[in-house]
Structure formats: structure tokens, C-alpha cells
Length: 335
Image 1 (cartoon, helix red, strand yellow):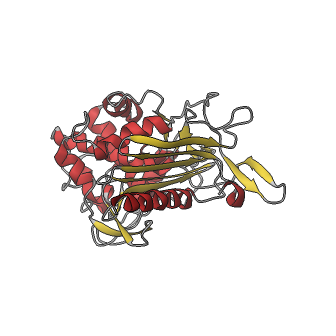
Image 2 (cartoon, one colour):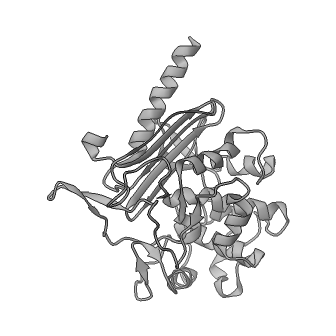
Image 3 (tube, helix red, strand yellow):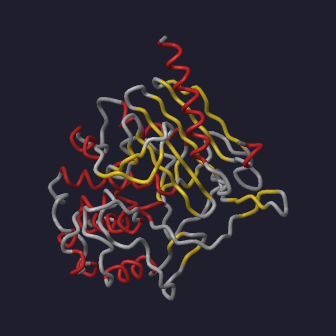
């Protein structure tokens, strides 16, 4: 993949809690090579963290999954069009709310990240639109659904999303190198910056493609391989400090068929912030400058993470290939 698709980024593979491969490829920025300690924006991989935060509030009886989101959103973001949309629908991408707005006159976006009043503008535009389908009737991936979940978290806790996540998830899991990109974000020297491959120049160039923006709860996590390994312990260990077993079970339950395809080629489904198949938990991420993919087989305790700072390639192709090598090797050992 380095030769064929100019892959740059970091990769980790672990089996039975033993890291069998962890390595960086290419440059993180102008001066530092990618390595296992480099911090990456992982885009929509963030969604499972937002789902976990919601489940914590469910455990505290601050949210009911089956009630209308209008009961939990701040008053300015309640819409008559959303009376039949539940928290469950947002979590499972079955709300029918149109993904992200199309009007751009309120946009203030920097490298794909929302600034200023952009989030407010997107939500208010969505509020005025009819649902695309009856809630619960079909799957349609909706980033703004997770933006709304972030608003629910803030409204029910009285804390900004990034602070709630830090205090109630990241710190409890000792993910000390992870944080949420906020409007006052400034990159540090140990972070990757985003590139794309330019065929004309035959090199990686800064990714400056204009795209839809990303908000904190749907795609702003910055993390490292080792920190994310700590996070995925919640899927393979019996005890963990952030969620009750019933909450974790709800997150990893298949609710509706999705349009993702796993290594086996089978049609995947969606839980809460997670793509699921019979054996796997996974998710992709894609924002300006960064693409990512991870997969976990909880039963076999196989984990593969691929974080890339080159958008001109498929991290899922890398992770699927590595996973198949590992699973084939495991099968050979059993025989």
C-alpha cells in the first residue's frame, strides 16, 4: 500500500492483548516521521465515544433512548419535525434527518472543522426540513445526528462536550494523549497534519479540498494508537470503568442493515456509533487530510487500527488485508 497508494500513517495490530505490529509510515508533518506516539485526527471513529457518553447518561436516568429528542435538546434546537425522532434513532442513523446542511452563507470552516456559529446554522437549517423517511424505517448515515447527540450531552450535563468526554471517558481510561479538537485548537509538534497525493507533482501535498465540515461529537477526536488500544479494551475485557455491561451490549447490538462491507464481504449492520457484523466491531473515518479505520473481533481478541494522514487511499483496504492475514494465521494454528 505504501508503493501502490502512497500510504502514510500509523498501523497497529494486536492479538490476545499482545501487540504484534505497531509502526509509522511516511511523514507526520514537515519535520517528523510518523511513529506510534503521533496524534491523529480519527474523524467518525469519534462517534462511538459520543454513543458511550449518551449511554452513561442513560444509566443516570438523564436520558431515555425511546423518548423524543425534543425532550433532551436545548430549547432553541427543538423542532416539531422531530417529535417522532428518538435518541435511539440518532444513535443508529435511522432518524431521517437530512445529513448536514447545504446552505453555506453561515459557514465558518477551517480545514473542514466547524468554527463560530457554523454548528448553530447547520442545526437550525436541519430543523426546518421535513424528515427524509419515517424514523426507524431505514438506515441513512447522518453526521448531524451525532452533532445533535453532542447538544443533548451538553444540555443534560451542563458541561461542554469536550470537557464531559475528557472527565468521564478519556481520563478514566488513562487516554492522556487524546482530546477533542475545539475552536481554539492549535496543532502541536507531535501531531500529524493532513495530506493528499498529487499525481501531477508526484508527491504528498497539504489537503486543501473544500468539504463538508465536521463537528466535535461526530468527528473531532484526536488520539494515538496506544490510547485507542486502551479504548478498545472495553470491547474485549470483562471489566472496564466507563459503562455497565448492559450499556455496552446495547452499543454493540445490530439494529439495522447498513451499507458497509467487512473483510468477509458480508453486509454489515449498525449499532450505536459502530458498524457491526457477526464477528466484528468496526468504523471508518474521513475528514479533510485524514482517513481512518479500525476493527475488533471481541471473541478472538483481534484488533487492527489504521490511521492515515493521506486521504488519497483507503485505510480499510489496509486493515482488511492485515485482518485476513491474522485470521488465516489463527485458523492455521487451530488446525
